[in-house]
Length: 298
Image 1: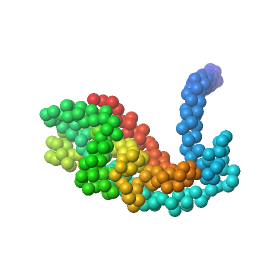
Image 2: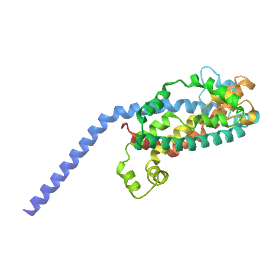
Image 3: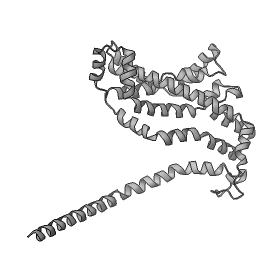
Image 4: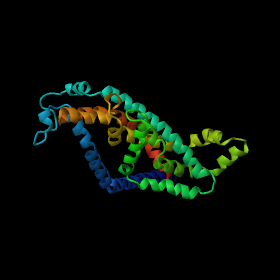
């Protein structure tokens, strides 16, 4: 009888394993079109970047050849990178972009966190209409306000300085909205307990709120940094001297001074994407966490 029980138990276990294997195979077959679609989209998204990197190592006529040439046939032209550095203030532009991007990122994350806390956790008269007014500014096209901003900057004497690249971007409705949505998910009991213990608003924000919003703050910081890193039109208006150029403006000057030499432009663009690419590769999990945890509450 014991032998029969053992045999029956092994048979049941074997049957369970076969059922689990069959279900896993069925699930994989059902999800196969999804994986194929994601693979195709990944290739389509990566193809332009791969083309840019390969073209930065080609000669001028290879870049504009018809039919297109994917891989360099006359050797890798690493001198394209040194040539770009020689004809543009690329080193200075790198430093300027890093200073502006880091400064705007830190200030905007802090200001958005403070404003988001006020709109999410403080009770004051006119809070909802004021928040709706902040959100309504997101509907204004960027080019619509850049000319008035330029006039203000010119009258303040800020042309060819870092001030017009920093001050107009201290507050943004997107950052305030994102942080406010995240803070709505913070239990009020945490804040009330800290207030009962005698914590002031500044101490409460620093010790209670900031540790709870790290994921959302990291995601916002990445968005802000990449957005500022890629700006071209606004720097083109307010920065006129080469020592003040940002990286996109330095790359734009290649076409103005050298004609349309795409191999040099692509070499400069390849060097320009390195910082945003590193930021994304090392912090991509923060982007997902921040967007997921922010939610749509409110």
